[in-house]
Length: 145
Image (cartoon, rainbow, N blue to C red; front, top):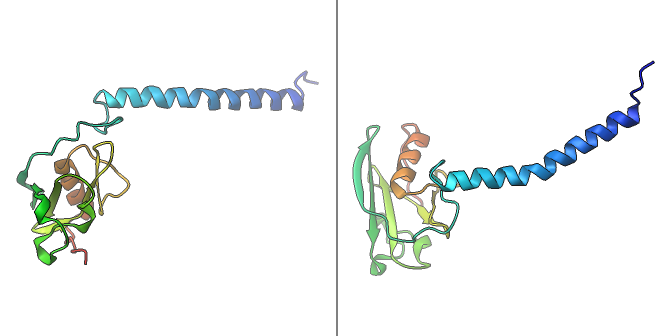
């Protein structure tokens, strides 16, 4: 018979699981530090909070636009497209896909999210608009009421 008992196997497995559990946070922290240095394109700390530049381009056959909006242009005004969700701080920013507003929000870490890619952050509104076009796959962006 073998000298390996069930107790020894279980003890070894428990030690291996504990080792992985203890090493995982360090590996994740190291990966985040590399990503913050420009690896993934997503910010890891507090950004510079500067206003992004305006853009107007055609991406994959869709016209995407982004522009700062003045404080007095705030509030929902129908088709003019200024989101009521941007009224929290500082000047806002509006993004449009084929003339329809894509509702966007800037996070505290200066990353951006939209209603199309709500659980994915982007470094710039331009990158966010391009990802929304990719996600829409040719579908028309429906305005939010």
